[in-house]
Length: 118
Image 1 (cartoon, rainbow, N blue to C red):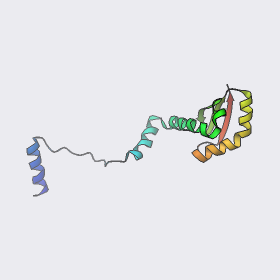
Image 2 (cartoon, rainbow, N blue to C red):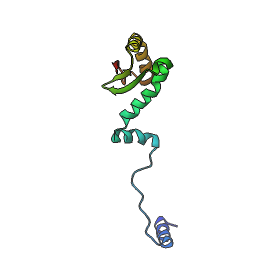
Image 3 (cartoon, rainbow, N blue to C red):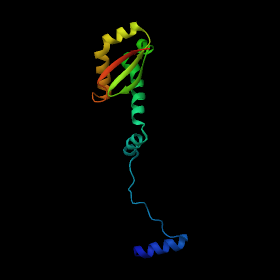
Image 4 (cartoon, helix red, strand yellow):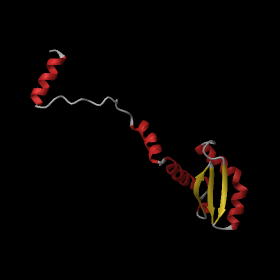
């Protein structure tokens, strides 16, 4: 049976014309999500949440309770600190913390830490 006859037979059997399929091929969800998140402006926010979750593991439990990453702007991670003594301790750990963050998220994403006393 020829393709034209098959199409005509299916249209008669269904009672409606054969639907035209979209011209775009199917895509893998993992390939679509990053572009979608960029277009919705969610990439930066997701990155901040991801860094916030990793902060606990990188800085450790005691200091994590008194600090929190608040924003990532121009590759500078701003961290809120609630006590001057904790600020002093973190300042001494700055290079190690920055190295841990860069190993996890890349040097192109975080290049500096700024501790904000609040």
